[in-house]
Amino acid sequence: MIKAVVFDMDGLMIDSQPYWHEAQVEFFSQLGTPIAEQDMVDTTGMRIDQIVKIYFAESPWTEDRYQQACDQMLDYVLDSIRKHKPAMPGLNHAIEVCRQEGVQLAIASSSPMSLIDATIDVLKLDGIFSVKSSGADLRYGKPHPEVYLNACDELNIEPQHCLALEDSFVGLLSAKSAQMKTIVVPEPSFAKEKHFAIADFQLASLNDLTPDMVQSL
Image (cartoon, rainbow, N blue to C red; front, side):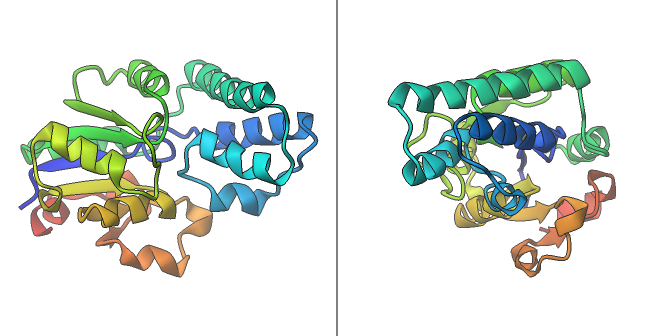
């Protein structure tokens, strides 16, 4: 029986992935480190510091430039979502379905709490989520399950009774590793990727979430 639904944030609640990609292209280029589209696809769902660490290992910069790159990319995305407020299609529908089912709602995101709070503010979702779990300062980010396990602990609900909504394969692995039920809503151009088959359900949009899906898990 599902007692709580835990939402990923970037790419699931808010269409921030294009801004993360723009930030990576701009700031890695400034550091003399070109980045390919497939590289950004492969790291979708990971923390920005983990992504920077990958490229730092390949062509090290000074330590201050390492942290500066993380900070500048975060600021770029923060400014972009505050300006554009790009809610994902079906977000309010999915929230309403979950609330009608009487389950608790939480967020488990790789992003820092500053971005989680900004997203809740721009989407006018204050008071909707009883738990906000950030993986930004954890020892391991997604695909490690820690951020999801922390959310379940704060909810005081066993992971087996929680449903995770994700958009990326990295996030899906994180939730599955936490032994949660999962629904994935991938970006349309990647929807046919075979690895999404590990999810309990795959949807084209949050608009497709139904009470029967929540009840059947």
